[in-house]
Image 1 (tube, rainbow, N blue to C red):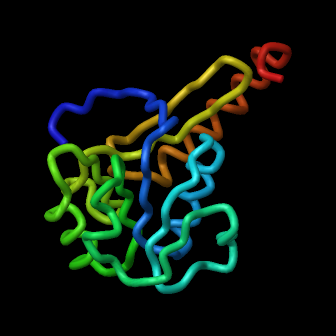
Image 2 (cartoon, rainbow, N blue to C red):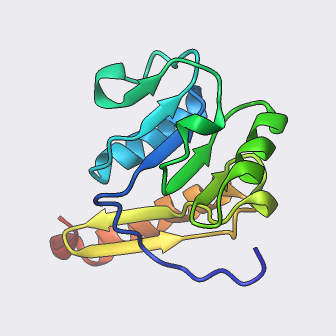
Image 3 (cartoon, rainbow, N blue to C red):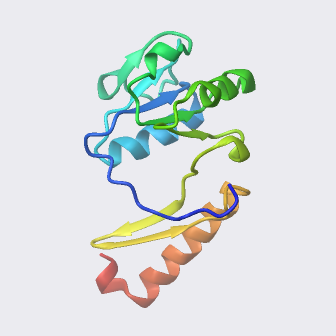
Length: 152
């Protein structure tokens, strides 16, 4: 991504797929569920933390037919060839987030803080998710100390 344009997406009525069923997929799925999205998850196996009743689970390996009607596809597999295949097969109407290769993604996630009507995001442009998380936590603590009443 050369010059990203930060936005917050309204995912209501959007079809979202997560390819993969491991720990990274679990984090992405939980954030999607919190945003009111019931994602379609394509993976032969699911991490024990993923509740099959909260998702649309396709217990199979990735196949293009499973994502043809998806608006957003998030790849979270440990197989680079599969992640690359998803991006290659996506149409120009689909946005793909390859969690293992930011240079092969249309977007990446932000570390976020949400309280009441406030939404703050931190990004390292996909280079260091752990640093973004650390920054988010420090900002969150600062906000709690400085604006404790507004933050509740």
